[in-house]
Image (cartoon, rainbow, N blue to C red; front, side, top):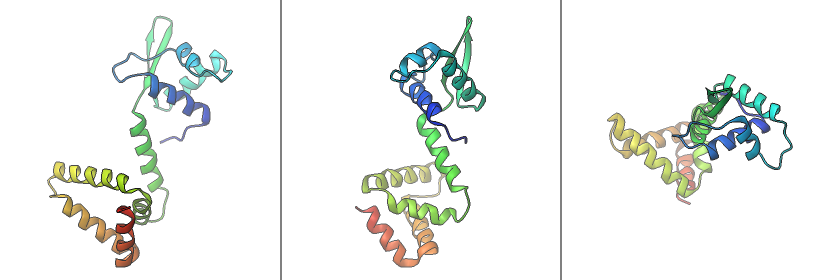
Length: 157
C-alpha cells in the first residue's frame, strides 16, 4: 500500500470524515472548502484527488462535468494494511508481532484478544484458548518463557 504524503493524507482525512459509506461522494470544490486553513488552489486539490484515484485510494464517478470522490476503503482498513505492509519489511514477523503486543495498553490487548477469539470462532479452530496457546508459543520462540511472562505483564496493565 502506498504511503500518503501530507497533502494526500489531509485530503483523505476530509473524505474519511465527511463522506459516509452510503454517500455519493464529494466534489473537488467541497474537498477544497473542507481544507480550510490551507491556501490551496482548486487545481491543486483536483490533482491530488486524481493521483489518489490513480493509486486506488479513492473512487470517482462522473456527475455532469464534475467528478464525485469517495474513499475506496475505510480509514481503519487503510491503517490495517499499513501495519501489514510494515510486517513485510523484513526481519522476523513473529518478533515484530511480539514487540507490538508488548506495546499495547491493557484495553488494546483486550480488543486484540476479542478479535482473535472472534476469528477463532469463525474459522472453527476452537476457543480463544487456542489463540492464547499460539501466542504463548510465539512468545517462547522469540524471547523464551521469560519473554512470555513479560508480555503477559504488559498485556495486563
